[in-house]
Length: 350
Image 1: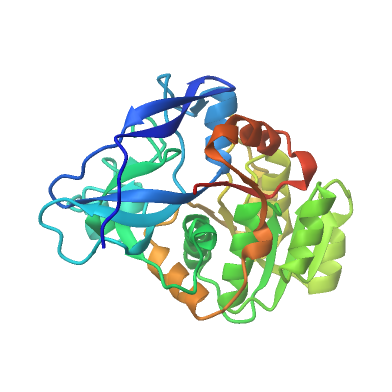
Image 2: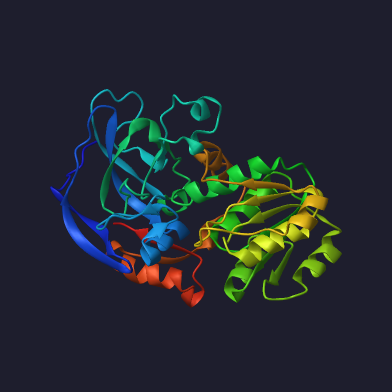
């Protein structure tokens, strides 16, 4: 199998805060241990929108122009040298994190926290909002024909949910609360259900997202603006064992930490736009609450693929909007402003 690979490709570049430009760049050539992938789909992540709107996330600051994007799927179209497993034509999901593999954290099962990790679309590592991209072979995970490219582009955020659930040490029958019905909240919910959660309550201020959460199998979904939301959830569930915060705002962090029972666990997944958050020390201390900060996915693409291939759940409803690469700027604005009932927006390539 061979492909007619062009010399140039479209790349969507973040030229400045709030400004996407489409440029033509040379198609890169794969080197030792690398393959060239024709990108088929890329999901728009909340972190992409942070960079688009603010030019930074904490101390990670864009040096414009910069290419965002870290939720890709695609097809291998050319091989470099010393390739051991992949072949031209393979359909793959792409692991966005490239850790050193040698440090203490990598050696003890926490490569997502490696100080030397290189993460796609996170400064200074350019991302994948472009038609072709070179990847190291070990970061390409084959996907079965039963999994579409669009669904495969959800595998990285699904892996984020799987990692958060793993960190919570969830037990069968646990009662769960999730603040936020966006993509990460929904994918955490399906991960929790697969891990044995018996009751899942969720909150969100956007009606379309609340409706989608019910469609995806949540047992109870309430407007986060409802001042009695916590009481209603506790009345329905008895008590909450584990809460996941998937928004990154102070109110939802408060909701997650205050709703959990004594001795319970809160996993904070959301990325705040601010540099400091606060907690209520006295009730949380009295509850001896376990608070865990979750970072990315910790290389959970393969279990995510196995869950999808087994038909454990259908994620297609999460993808509410699709765009071509020329319209990335419009898509970013829509996601940033929560317009038109958007949940997961995705860039689709021919």
